[in-house]
Length: 131
Image (cartoon, rainbow, N blue to C red; front, side, top):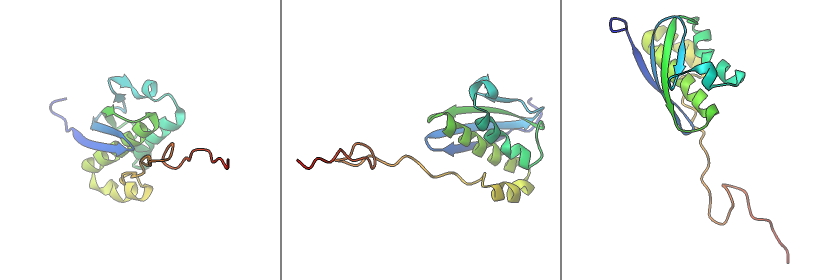
């Protein structure tokens, strides 16, 4: 492993941060020292994570080791996809138009709206009572 290239990138989504290390291999993805299919049990999340490899035709060409912190399972999957996409850019700049068109290089800036005073949540109001 010392003689081969390692590509590092950081992906973010909501409150999640994924530190991704990408290196040539046979397509093994490890998340927080566990297999990613064991970590992300939902099939939809697994599909989201593998999308950057599918659009660049690099399935089973790179191994991924990722450390993910914060947020929920869905945000973590989005952060991992973002990180993998950025790492693939380091591998080959020719992937940029493909990944950009799919929107994988853009950090999804949607985050939870802050709670306002007088309200129960960001927009939920207490029940109105006429009397």
